[in-house]
Image 1 (tube, rainbow, N blue to C red):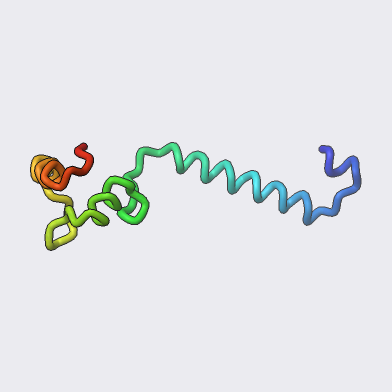
Image 2 (cartoon, rainbow, N blue to C red):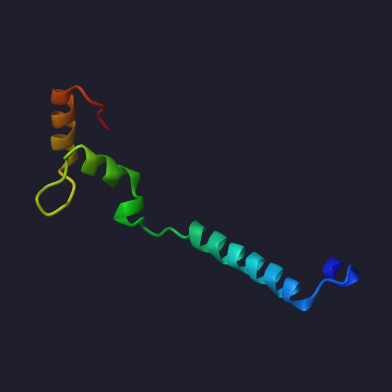
Length: 77
């Protein structure tokens, strides 16, 4: 290992190893088909910012959203 050859301290080996393992775990989790939470979902955030949610916080049906946006002159989906 390169770190051993150059005489790096042991804590440095473990630091690089832990950082690499963490990056690998995050990469694997990122590839799983998990749904995004609402704060990270761009579609939900767009609807929230444009007042296209019902009283419970759920998105309106697509037909209603498209009609409202067409009336406002905004983008449709």
